[in-house]
Image (cartoon, rainbow, N blue to C red; front, side):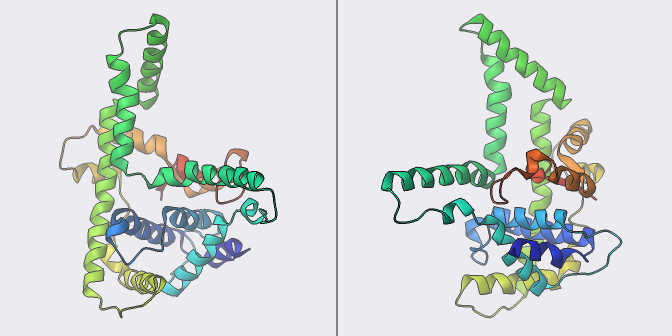
Length: 287
């Protein structure tokens, strides 16, 4: 499979460098969105599959290969093979119309549940979390008392699990996003200095931009990886240091741990384009 070819291409790579490259593309895609016309061909699923290819590879800190733009384009194109859904290919035009519609609805609903969710901005997710797990439980006083008690009990357990207040945790998530927004702004500066030929095809513009970013990767040295102390010091607002520690404890894991999780049934059930990824559960990678 093409996805396996992508993994093999990464086997001799430097693991820290590969994670930095993935973070560079992720920042550009996430914050550029529709406003950055250079990248109409990338999607969050492409980035997730690139990151999964890094996890599945044998890349390590001891290996030294540094990848250029051509390598990255090859890996991205082959990683997209993981988006191929065999069920979709099994739908034949000669089938009963209602059967076809039912099969398509199953596939599209699955894609919508797993792929569209990650495309929502962090602000919308944070607001929804605050509403569901803080504002509503705290304001709920009327109605069936048993239901009210049950909801407030769940809210109390959530606070205990988090180890800090939910508003403080949300502030940390905004802080991590702001850190990567700075990376994105540096990427725009790099692209503004590079004179790229006008390409007729979007994929050609993407290739030229990726090459430019990787050729100037030295610009981002020290900008991608962060520690609890560095991200706290960079904050323009007060943030509880304990909340930063809790966020990193709950949502970050080392590559070795992510590789182990990839073998567990919960993260390996089904095809690549719709199975649960360890990166959905632990989106921050410890180096």
